[in-house]
Amino acid sequence: MVEPAAGRTTRRLRARMSGSAVRLVVHDRGHDLLGAVHEAESWAAAARRTVASRPVDPVPVDLSGEVKQFLVDHDNRVAVRPMTPGDLPDMARWLAADHVRRWWPTDDTTLEGVAARYGPSIDGMTPTRMYVAEVNGRSVGFLQDYRVRDHPDFAMLTPDPDAIGVDYAIGEPSWLGRGFGARLLWAWMPRALRRFPDARSLFAAPDHRNAASLRVLDKVGFSRGVWFDEPQSGGCVATVVGCTLDVATVLG
Image: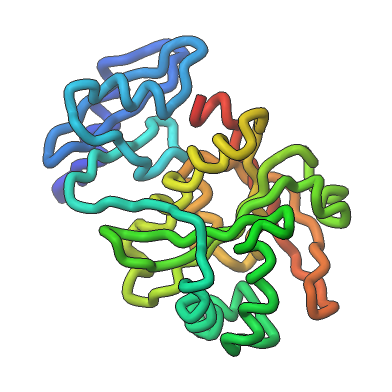
């Protein structure tokens, strides 16, 4: 049996580097650039330093293992922008999709209902902000973020009420399972830190059955924490997994 390339890379990196430094590898068109995180340096900064001569910043492939895996993607551009009223028809269609409704239940997915629910956040009238995720200019999903303490019932259940909470979904079914969930979160993070420059952690709490979402969070550097019951808008309760990203460690 031929050993997978990722396994060979990890084995070579372990052989070349020792000590307690966090190790990383950046994949770039068949080339593996090996590096390590310096003292007081974030994983993202170390990856950028490792590919200093490349014109594109590395993005995470999987940050959950002993060796942090990054990629230089020359073909896809993932961006996050503020949602506008013109995005509401897409938002209504995404919320009505079966794969979104399973984890993001919405009573009214008509355009009018979605506008009533999300319009105030789009207009900046609530603590929550709405965003659209794009791949190469095409809208594929959405995110919302907020300071956890602005939602008191939720804040009591989280380890850091000052954390920045995020919820997200890829709305277009054809873009599922292609690694873009991690990419859209990574693209959102700098925007969140500009909005909340004092943030020390990011927080997400997917349903404990949502294995795909939990794995996405693993890949971008979140750590799974306690399970807790979160009240839902319809009066039911969902058991969720609190996941936290330490900003200084991962992003700097």
